[in-house]
Length: 228
Image 1 (cartoon, rainbow, N blue to C red):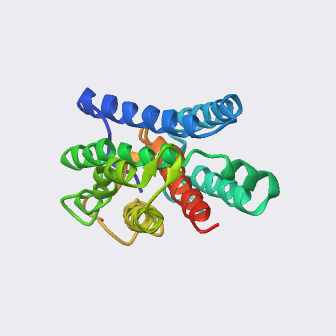
Image 2: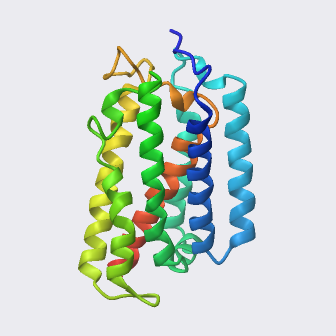
């Protein structure tokens, strides 16, 4: 099984995606007190995944488990460690909730990129706001929630704020599930006519390995703090 190609994509797609990725990183780094350590770890991880994508490591689509999972799962294992370990929980407790909320703004350019990739036959329509992906709503409403729910660093409308994070997390899970099921692999269930191939290539490998985990963590950390 061989995926389609990603040659000759318009440059504005990659540029927009790059801006979204580094904006996501900027928001997350701004939220933590361990900035240098966070920058180092994320830089190493981004470099590893970029090199693997550039060397076509993920294009062996018959491999079991799918090779893409070898770089997706570690991010979520780290997130799990943050929640179960004492050191991890201390890290989470010090995150700036305002920055974690604003981080979701990057979902607007990401959704535009997904739509443009669909037009280039690199992802299926169901992964866009023209299909089954409503994740852009979280990006549009993020600055509104930030404005309504924060006074200084204090959350003033906690129920609204927690509710928004829960709904936004569900929106994220929706597109993640569709992305997994539409990616060419032995487990593909959707979009056989136009599968999700973009994530196998640089720089779009950073969507499942950097952007999604950071957005996912921003919601879980905020919900945890909101219920404390």
